[in-house]
Amino acid sequence: MTMAIDTTCGTDPAFTTCTFQQIHAALLERKELALLDVREEAPFAEAHPLFAANLPLGRIELEAYARIPRRDTCIVVYDDGEGLALTAAQRLRQLGYGTVHLLAGGLQGWRDAGGEIFRDVNAPSKAFGELVESQRHTPSLSAPEVKALLDADADVVVLDARRFEEYNTMSIPGGISVPGAELVLRVRALAPRPETRVIVNCAGRTRSIIGSQSLINAGIPNPVSALRNGTIGWTLAGQHLEQGKTRRYSDHPQDPAGNEHGAQAVAASRQVADRARVGRADLAALERWQREPGRTTYRLDVRTPEEYAAGHLPGFSSAPGGQLVQETDHVAPVRGARIVLVDDDGVRANMTASWLAQMGWEVHVLDGLHPEHFSEAGNPAPTLPPAPPCESVTAQQLWQWLQDASDKQDTVLLDFTSSANYVKRHIPGARFALRSQLAEILQHTATARRYVLTCGNSLLAGYAAGDVQQLTSQPVFVLEGGTAAWIAAGLPLEAGETAMASPRIDRYRRPYEGTDNPVAAMQAYLDWEYGLVAQLAADGSHGFFVI
Image 1 (cartoon, rainbow, N blue to C red):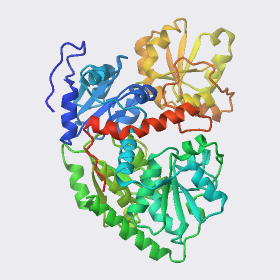
Image 2 (image 1 turned 60 degrees about the vertical axis):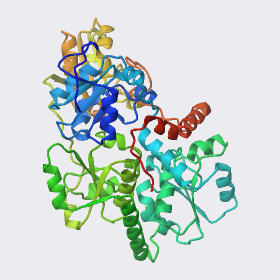
Image 3 (image 1 turned 180 degrees about the vertical axis):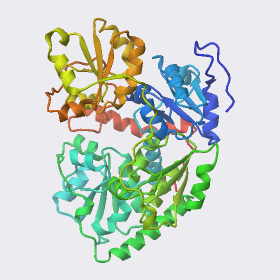
Image 4 (image 1 turned 45 degrees about the vertical axis):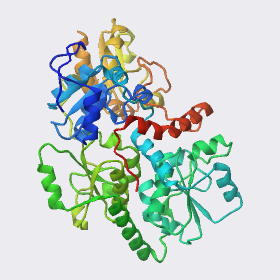
């Protein structure tokens, strides 16, 4: 893209600005572009462009290298007037990214130029799911209809396509956890009789639609229906959800004809991938692509995290297929990049790739693999930039400071963990802090004699230490080993929102999460999803198609 310096925005002239029109054109031409919203997740979820990816300012060092692997990627950052974008651009440049721009006018500039504004998280995937249903008329049953079938002990099986953790929190009575990428691979063992009705559910709509349509596309003989509106619809109908269930597909023995069923699944998945124009690749092609300048290639293993940890191809990241389709914007924020998928069964990668291809990605499945290629075990440590040098303090020394009457009021302990983790447990006296709000926080602690920073393992705290050191002349320490070391030392903890130096905006509360969601919020979420197809048409940049 050709950029022009905008001298009217009051931004640093070291960074050129990029307009809505330029970004829209780049998306239509499928050029590589990372449009980054550097606010916290909650304000991001309130309003953002369709293909914006959320990368909060305070987490750039932790996430940038993994999510934007090529240092010369075209990056455009923005905020909504909070003053975060310029700092984010400077931080990205310090990390080695050489092509960083600011969005002209920020989010308001996007609005003023006529750009469509989307809400919630994972908006591209959710909008695509609605498009699939509108074009393929994916069969669905209402919550009362499904409950009537279950009450009548009908020949049905309910398959929950979410992460196991979500299923465990709340589930449809009798449902079995089968995360989305596993559906085509496992369904024949779970519903061996072709007469058995298969019902796929998630929390809302997207994974139910995509999961059901996956089974239909793969040609399974069973009747298939999505649970309309998922657990939200179930709750709105006044029906009881189970909690704490642990039924998994792996608990069910394979059908005696498992080999035959496996071959059917492989053949069907390959046919679906071919219809979606999924590319094929071998290791030689992958090696060439890795050396190719000016092109990003994401290498993703779509099997379960347990399988990945047991053995995977070097250089590949774990991205279970069902969630990858749901959260593509998070895993691959560089729109226009190439994606290469791998599995060891010939089903999960092909089915996942079929959806990514329809969502406008250049996606390939890696063929010709053997067990010896899955040679790397465990979960690789992420590549991270070095943290600035800083003083450290042990848990025992911090305990003494906090207990000493003369020091207690003078030691300000800032906790940079997630707000959810902070509320669950934290060091007594610790204040929850967002790194992006440090200047305001320190203004309210002017009498501090020293600052101690922590988080779960003090990784993020180590990066934040440099920011604090620039804002104060007082000593700054990082807790060695973070709150985990404090816990390991058997020192006291407390819970709750005891000292919130920052608001809880680091994570957007999904209306379909948990068991205490307001009815109005759940209904509003469904109403929003119903309108996504019209928003896609208004936006005009998506490049989606449906087979």
